[in-house]
Length: 153
Image 1 (cartoon, one colour):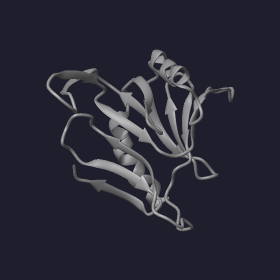
Image 2 (cartoon, rainbow, N blue to C red):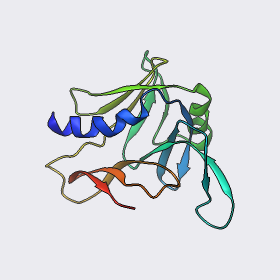
Image 3 (cartoon, rainbow, N blue to C red):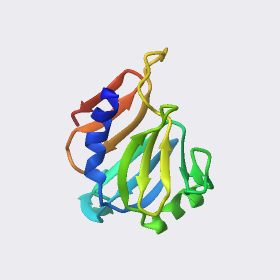
Image 4 (cartoon, rainbow, N blue to C red):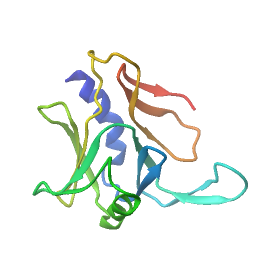
């Protein structure tokens, strides 16, 4: 339970922010919260509009309604994932399910269920997910098989 509180604290920065867009970057699902804010482009000159925060998932996940209908998951196509942004769902809080899933609660009754939680049974090092501020040189909060940590950028 102490590990969950370490995870819950950084996620509290999302409280009250809408999930404004979602997509794929290779095999990583990304969800942008808040904004839009202007940031320098990662490559080349120019400005891009992004969310204040981004959640990058490299583990099994699913976005479900209160009735259990799966709107999207780690197998969904670009269109299904992109459609989540039109919901403008606002992050409310996080909880830990009895099976160990991290559940991000949203104001519309939906939830983003994330299977990636640190495990002492892990046999190799793998990143589950990270929370970051796109375009800013601030630390990323990373959850992996070996635990949680802030990674300097």
